[in-house]
Length: 366
Image 1 (cartoon, rainbow, N blue to C red):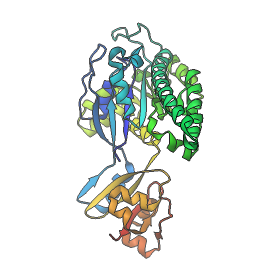
Image 2: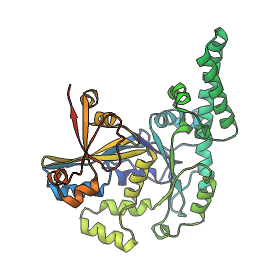
Image 3: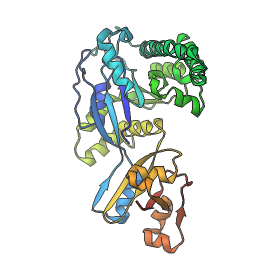
Image 4: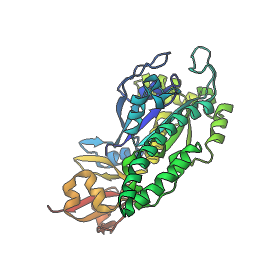
């Protein structure tokens, strides 16, 4: 689907280390600010246990997981909204993403410098929040000026409505809030879709901690949770340094033993990818058979024709029906033929809302 999560944070908080763990595309990682100048883009496989089960049942010739794109964006600094530290370029990189993973340093280590000289993740968060808010305020004020001229020129109801929305954004941003706190209906969202405001993007806060603090957390993590409690945003803990060690292990059994020693069932990056999936309001449907078992990504709440379009636009244009098997039924009965015999294949039309885990065969005609 081409959806991207931008990894942002101050310099030296662990962004590139984490990106390296997520992707085979190796971002430069060093103990100094701005080691990442161009945004690194990695296409990441989404961990999916259900796809592994379908592979076990059907033994297909190939297995294709769903993917997501992660973008490692160079560290922001104070004054980024005014161009400091290549700020304009970095902010433009963020604008192109669909969601933000905000990495916060929540560990103490005298050997790793901090751009502000001390560890305070809430301050770090506010530094970036302010820069994003200032840039959005600049965008909103520019649009207000243009829209006001349209509204005065004639009886332009759309321009008048747009001004009302822009004023809501302006008041929120001037009060130090993110644009996402402004509640809009679907029609209002369409009016401001082309604004691409940075602070309206969904955000996941990732607290980078020591591996010994993954279960208990620390005072820095608790401070972050308190600071974001009204944002309706998820907070996830991850130990980037330990994840880097796990990523270096090529043998599955070695990784498993390493995780067990840490008291973990799966790498933290897997949890991060799944959290990003939720952040973007994404779900998974499957196609499976002897040729291929494949996971497909779709927007939660999509109807059958739009979901068929994820595979190919012709599937949506010529949609006739969808043959749907529930994942649990498929695993229990062990094959499509068995599901058909048991009456577990539902024939769904254009109004069917696809559910996470559905196994679907689309019928279409172009």
